[in-house]
Amino acid sequence: MFSFLRPYIFSLDPEAAHELAIKSLKLNFIPENFFQVKDEHMLATLLFGKNLKNPIGLAAGFDKSAEVYNSLFKLGFGFVEVGTVTLKKQLGNPKPRIFRLEKDSAMINRLGFNNHGADIVLDRISKDSPNGMLGLNIGPNKETKNKEEDFLACLSKLHKIANYITINISSPNTEGLRDYHQKESMNKLLGRLDKLKKEKKINKPLIVKISPDIDRNEISGIIELIFKYKINGIIVSNTSDKNREKLIDEKKEEKGGLSGKPIKGLSTEMIKIFYKEIKDKIPIIGVGGVDSGESAFEKISSGASAVQLYTGMVYKGPGVVKEIKKDLISILKKEKLRNIDEAVGINA
Image (cartoon, rainbow, N blue to C red; front, side, top):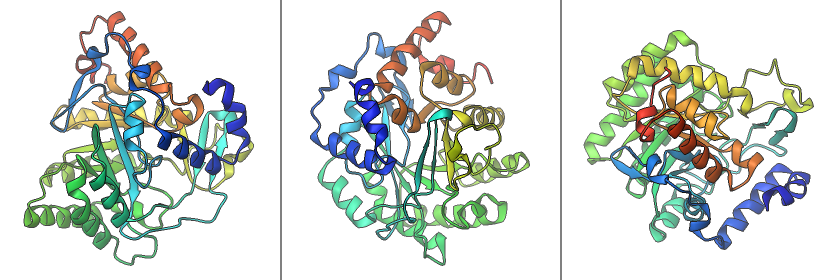
């Protein structure tokens, strides 16, 4: 069906197409068993102490304001991450702000954390319990002078409604946000979050989402702080505001974060670097160019315990998770692996 509809969908402005997708998912009309596959038990895994049917997640950025997460679970995702959610409602940057680079199977966005705000998200999820593992990605409002205060307020307000909270310090579209990759700034932020967790007895996993554009020399310092403050996992990685050299689409010079196939190798290489120091102490969630069983296995065998995608679904439609699951199972059988956990890090 998506192959038939894709020319029409791609004739629309990307943001209009996204709004159409959200409206369609609200109808919730496709049965869950349509997206199930044979031998799916081989993909069952554990993430942050919770059982997942499979390690394929939807990255933050699609369901920004927690409108359709339960419909997304029906598409076959093992887990879903909503957001980025900010303390106050935010319109984001001026349009146009999403660009398809069809020749490169990529996208560039400069959305700027547009979402309905923490109070509305809290109300929605409180009234509609998630049917699977739900992550909640938080970030600061654009106009906030002290970004740390926004992170603290969002964690305090939203921790009860999610299975884990992602601290997003890696979007290239909020000025100064990536400064938190610097050791002194990260130490201060994570220290304050750790203090809040202890004071309020917040017992939810905290995850940090990393930029793919960091200097490789910064990685050891980041890992040191992640262990110091007992961060429960990392997401590698967000979009890139670099890596335009090999792109061929005429929209390649648009300002914003690049996602999709062009950053696949970059994020996989970063996963390997992080995994060599982290090993199995905390899980890595791999993101960047996942759109097939082969690309998912590449991330997992490089050290990711789970993967997330977004741009892959834009180009391949809602059936992409089913195809990834089928392909992953075939790869596991070919490699003589009994389950997906045995594949983690084997090629790191």
